Amino acid sequence: MTDSEAMKAAIQAVIREMMDRQMDKVLRTDPFIEERHHASKPLYAALVPDEIFKGSHFERRFVTSFGSVWERLAVVAANSGLGYGAQGHRIDGLVGEERLRRISEILGNLEHSAKGKKKTKPDWDAEIHYVLDGGGEKLPTFVVCDVFAQSTITHERFAFELKAPLPNSDITKVSKEKLFKLYSMDPPQIEGAYFALPYNPYGRRVDYGWSFPARWFDMKEDPVVLIGNEFWDKIGGTGTYKAFIEAINEMGHDYKERIYREFLGIEPPADAYDQVLA
Image 1 (cartoon, helix red, strand yellow):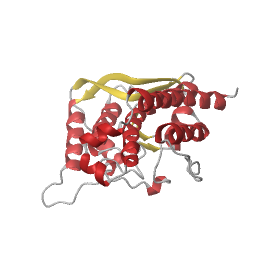
Image 2 (cartoon, helix red, strand yellow):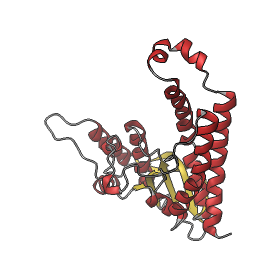
Image 3 (cartoon, one colour):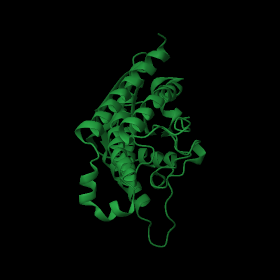
Image 4 (tube, helix red, strand yellow):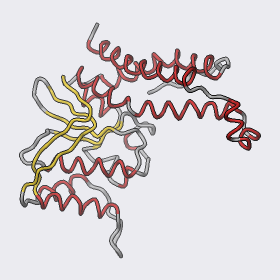
């Protein structure tokens, strides 16, 4: 088995575990019960087909489950690529007091426009230059990153704030503060830290259009932002994103068929398998 095949198999093992657990939940331990739905939402039941709410029942549980899987998949990629990966890794270091003040200043300016002034736009290169020009007494500081990875060859260390493809504003703000602190540690504790999204629902990086993270990062230009293939190939090496895409698409047919037949109780439509991840 090649490295690419091994990585794909490891990715599929994580996803299969999640999907099988989800299928068991919606079919056995937490099924959609029509009588309960009719009793609790009689108005909705009178106006909208049960199938709509049955699909919503599955969707809510699926999205919640998959949210915790991204980090596990990233660790799989890191172990196969850079050599070592971990979730929820704590990084301790020293950060100058003035650097911490400047971090708060930048975040405050991005969140609240000064009266009579234009709204501040994010610009990572200018911001981090301003932060690092600060000094002051060094204070103990720590950051718990979503995913930590280290090369077993070069020993380079990387931290990733890995969020769902459409993150909200508050989550993104917290991630940016973490990146500032990681880059401000003296001596340095990492060689790189990134705000990462596992895939781009808009296609190309230049087309990414979700407005909430754009309040904190220039999502199209900031070098600390990685989206889709940029992230996977960074943590796992060239070809990782391709392996990820193939792993997902190979599993899609079987799970879609199970969901149609076993959960929805209908035959899959002719175009059921046309939609794939690209």
